[in-house]
Length: 344
Image (cartoon, rainbow, N blue to C red; front, top):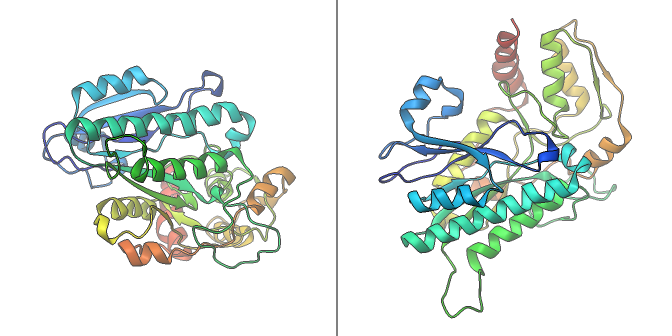
């Protein structure tokens, strides 16, 4: 994710890499320190390594559970922004809930402590971006398709959702209530900002364990000429967003003046097609695609606990959320051409 360096050796960025085997209980992340005085707000993860190298002063790879690594960075750098993207995703978290808690909660706690220490050491606020998820919801079966606001039905049924919701509250605590009985005030040292992302569809990232990955899996399988059995019902509907729009949303929220923000956690969304509509779009581009529906009862139950749609008006009003890709352009202009070229 992009980060702006405003001075000498400032800025820190956490990029989620492919997770190591879950038995090592480790979240791997890359810490990218921009070249002083440069801005990396150019979506560099999608650019060439040569271009990226010009913008990166130093990169680390390690575990967010490794406090020694964080201490080493703490001693050497002045950090003003943290984009925390390391996580164990929803499906894998159900198989290893304790590991999920260690990575998703303890790892986040480590970074919040790191941010607080940075704020104290250098006398300035640290902006902390946190990617939450619609998994933080837990909706009843009779809710229908009404778009839900951020505060509604926060009763998740998955370990991943519980982790995300708790970390939203942790961020709010660190931003406004940290050590509130201490003689010294610690409030307003961390500027915590979070987005509850819907299902994200990327043309460049292979699906890797998310419960909403059925949309991306359909496209990649069709492009490769492989059959695909979708694990949800044809009528299943959840909100989605194209990855470039998700990146834009992170940047827009990170750059927004604090005075304009009315909350710490924001919904975002772009479209919410049924699984059958996604299949139609994929087969229109790949007529020979063999896509069938074989619902997995347990995974379907997880999807059913998420809302059909979310209300993202607060994000549109506060910091100008405006996704570029609606449903058809997302497939026709972004996903299909890019993925087709990958497997050509």
